[in-house]
Amino acid sequence: MIKHFDEKNFDEALSGNVIVDFYADWCAPCRTMSRVIEDFDRAHPEVLFAKVNIDTAPALAERYGVKSIPTLAFLRNGEVEKMNVGVMTMRALEEEVL
Image (cartoon, rainbow, N blue to C red; front, top):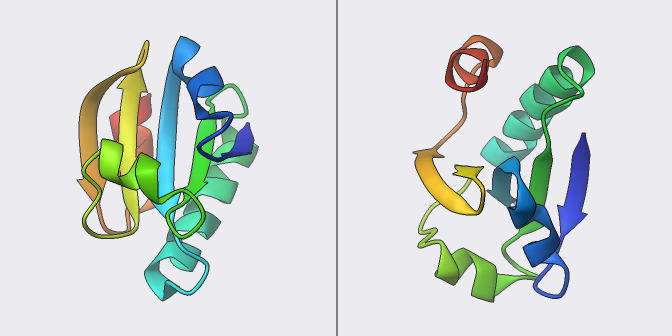
């Protein structure tokens, strides 16, 4: 499931396991990563993706130390387990998550 979050509602996403996609609308690699996430979501709807636009939620990007985009932060119960910078393939994403 893909949900969009901002600084006001992001803490809702922290109650379980979630993959946070830090992106920007102007970022071409982010658009590529979004297509991978959409394909992954169709195959695995039980996985929660929290999309955070760094242009509208810069404090969240700063909170997680995001310096480049796209960045995926893999969170378990609100704690960062791993972060991945750059575009991932569907297979690589599946290997990380499943």
